[in-house]
Image (cartoon, rainbow, N blue to C red; front, side):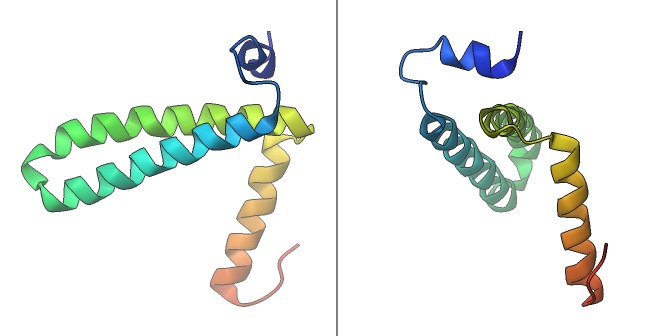
Length: 94
């Protein structure tokens, strides 16, 4: 079963805006963990575990959003990698 099919079984998930909302929430959780690891280094292990879970959830939501719009995740990875190489080198790649 596709991830999108699972997501659509949840109430209020008829449109991709809910997926984007969840992504924003999870990204905020990642940011919170980064700040707290920096602020409270003695609690890094716990915050890393929390961040790992938030990143997993964010990744799944990204896959769901790709399904909403028919984007291939590997194609997006390659596109993003090319964009990063362009920024680093200052030249157009690919």
